[in-house]
Length: 119
Image (cartoon, rainbow, N blue to C red; front, side, top):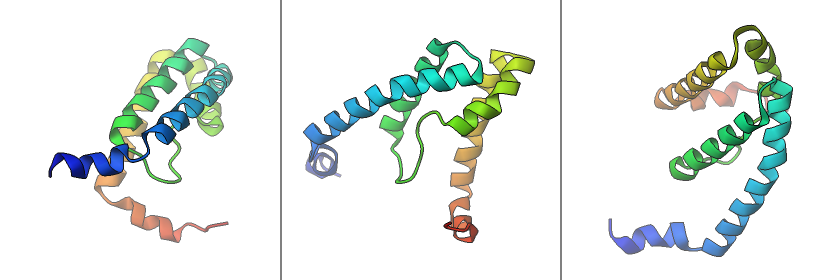
């Protein structure tokens, strides 16, 4: 694979990609703070976690329809975890969620999505 074949898809729209990244990063700040407050953790933890997710996804890549940010549903689920067990268990639960997602990808469980209703 030569250098031009890598430059074509990655750098074909660098201005638009950088602008989109800045807009998403700015929109992510209040979302991360709000969801961390809902989950009962320090807002700085939410900002650090969102930044870490953004960096990992920037290098790992994403898919259409994939949510690479904090979600309200996960924040609500994590409230009792943080309240009962503390912040350490939140980190372990987050890492375990990532391991399960990677495992689902390796086992090609995405093919099972055709059985899920679109409505």
